[in-house]
Image (cartoon, rainbow, N blue to C red):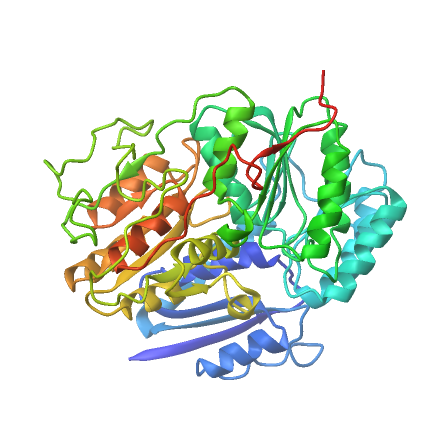
Length: 538
């Protein structure tokens, strides 16, 4: 019989990312059925109540509040004592000093106090959205650039922060900035990337990860990745951080080429950014997503344009075909049997098969994917995404289907990001009907699920067993701790076709679903995948 344990640690604070991981680890403890480990905000207390937990007991200072830590476990009575002890150990580990370090007797209470007397140049803010403004402003006033990992920050506050940052000569990355790389140090959800000549300005975390991981596969590294927040190129924000980040990379001697990445920008903001780009000394590859008929390129095309600008050959992007047949739309299109399928056998860097000319989802510039009849659910694939820009890109390419970004603010309030906790995506995958096509992204790197295939592979195998075709866009580098090749092989063994290019995965999924796919742009044309040059660097 199940029983509950509800406790409060008064005055104990940990950041949301750390608590996401602890909560996930607690849920995996033997005998635990449900675990909530979070700050005792009204939202989190409500979530616990909705799960059937009793209100926590009041502490010495009264009822629990946002400055207290909520612990709620449900499970087998004889197992909970050991689970609570294990959870206490996990939480104590968050407070332990780093190896070789000493505990701080009086930790600073503000960002400005923490920066005082130190050679700090950057602060990372990861607190609930309603509290992020004060902490970020404190950092700006201390003369620090700031990365705001927090989401659910009002757009008016974002504009105020970015305007003040411009006055102080610093940069605001975010809000909802999921990834950044500063001089080789990854922040947030960050892949392990080799150093190199490409600087990235991104109003998109997963968009930046896709482009930089493709560059890394091709042997090209990055100087910096400056995230600016997903709303920066909106009409409300007006590219305030994008313009400053472009200036910073243009002045950086280690940056020879800039890639600018964004979800579809506001047209008037895109024009302003275009004028700024034309005045830079450093060439720029624009990866501003949008309708193909508007001359917009996909992220893979942008990465390829960057490689060509650097004089680096474009490789065959690694691809692992599905081990079980799922009849393609076009009879002339190679089937995906495990052998003898007519597709070219090209060894990819990971040791798996790489997608070559004529392979599934090849999407060569200037060609459209097959269309017409095909599998059931011909309205298009079911896109089940954790990355917002990857979701937008896939939807634009597929042209039809149902796409959900489970990393959107609406799905992450009081819940771990889907890159960490795939629960909502597993439910969505289980709901795809027989004969349908499911398209998922899996993003690797620091901060993400340490072994995403452990939970996704069984769900994929179950979907394939009931007649669902599963296509995975795997975004990662060979240096990521999860192992790009190991994750690809595990997902592929479960029955998924695995692509390292999200654009090609989307085309392949749409082809399987019988939907017409959007035509690639020519990365050597005047479309936004082309390199913009002005004076150029010597």
